[in-house]
Amino acid sequence: MSRRLAVPTAVALSFALVASASAAPTKTVTKVRTGPSGTRFYTPPSPLPGKKHGDLIWARTLTGAAVAPGAASTKVVLYRSQGVDGKADAVSGIVSLPKGKAPKKGWPVITYAHGTTGIADQCAPSRDVAGTPVHPYNAYILPLITRWLKAGYAVVRTDYEGLGTPGAHPYLIGSSEGRSTLDIVRAARQLDPRVSTTTIISGHSQGGHAALWAAGLATKWTPDLKVRGTVAFAPAAHLEDQIPLTSQLSTPGGGLSGLISDIVRGIDVGYPNAGVATDLTDVATALYPQTLTACLPELSQPASFGGLAPKDIFKPDADLAAVAKLLHANDPSILTIKTPLLIDQGAADTTVFPTFTDQLAKDLAKNGTTGLTYTKYPGVDHGGIVVAAAKDATAWIAKRLK
Image 1: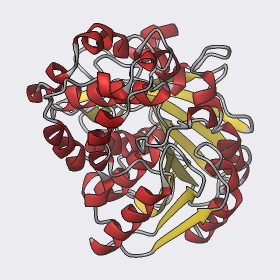
Image 2: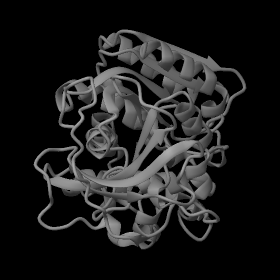
Image 3: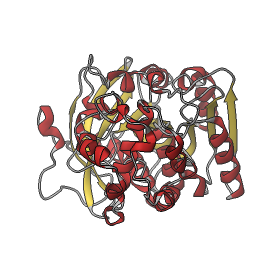
């Protein structure tokens, strides 16, 4: 999420929410298929090429607003992953390489998971266009990406399952986010063998949630990757404690109501048999299709969900406890992470409240997570944390990559 996503309400929800195992880059360069231009790039061939999750389908040079300054090359890629239905699917993302000669063992790679942009395909970071309402929600992270490129790291950025590619995005479904975030590293190594297996995971807001899930899944999902640490900026957590509070909010919710609409769609995609959409009021039901066609800034407007009070989104008799249970199943607080972890949180954040991040840190420690560092930055808001913590986080990463 960008700084424009902070929700100034007294109560808000905390979200916004290869194949080679060798450390040395191989000299064999796999021939990379060039993908079609325009939006056709995001429609995978059938049958889906490749055999394993992380296999590269195709790539092409990326230009425009999504390119971080300072990269020697930037490619948009399409790669295999696994969808929420357990079947192989295609996910898109961005691979940026630093300038200069790669180290003997290859460039360490940071896989970055983005904050909430929306669920519609045009909200995907790799499709970003300057001047669109969603552009600030994507562009705010570019200075941090540039900092990492200048430090000599390759940086990869997944769009997530169903965001840009066929199917709907399972927003805040942890396993889906985590797999997408990890598999793009494998794809990047097939794209360019100078990308090493030495990996740092990072993300902000929704992406902080995704980064934590990737860290929790990495040992079993991508054992070939050498994860040296994870940096989660203001990660979305404990949503199950907050959804019931929506019934108490009687003024138009703006960005908060927009986020709630995406959460409902995410649960609907991840758990289609749960029937969560049937809990929506008639007015919310009429607006619900917009979650598949509009990005978060449009959903937050008065003509969309932003014009609804949170209490008017769900029916009075809706089983919010059942919704909370599904959110809990995807909450990072249930994870155990065995690699070093840094959580950075703004103390003035009104989107991901520090109280919930405090609890998340305690939960992770209780679960057996080791090597956890939790840092709070006074006076820093939600979007501002990636700026305020950039220097410290990069220094933390450098120590783990020595």
